Image 1 (cartoon, rainbow, N blue to C red):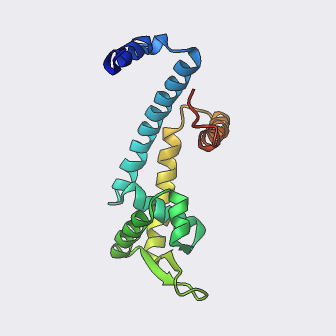
Image 2 (image 1 turned 90 degrees about the vertical axis):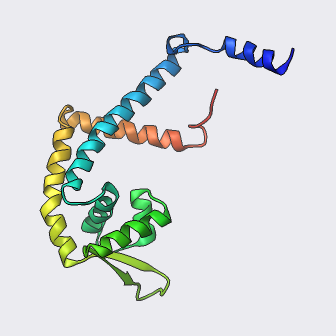
Length: 171
């Protein structure tokens, strides 16, 4: 059998539609699409909220982390908001230019750099964070607080499972 006809035979044996997939795969795909749509809808709310203050969602994430944790090493911010090291440098640079974040050296390690809110940054977050929290709360209102806690726990299990060595296994 030639390579082309072998590929055609293999393709012919694959399910042509989602309905032909095994139940486990159909359910997993439906969850993925539902999760992606829910995330997109809530992310739009968050983005629209922070855009009102001329911030990107990444800039707001840095500000929010600093607001709640105080001065933080750049590497820790990177881990906390899940961006690349170049991305965190870019975001902090933009926030420094806006006058809401400052860089500080570490008294113990000359190589370590902290980011911290300036007074203007602190004032900004005290003004906008409560509004942001209310908007996200409104976006989540389709679920009761108990349901939100349950979904949070389930999503933690899902995320940990997907990131484990066996989570990404195909077959």
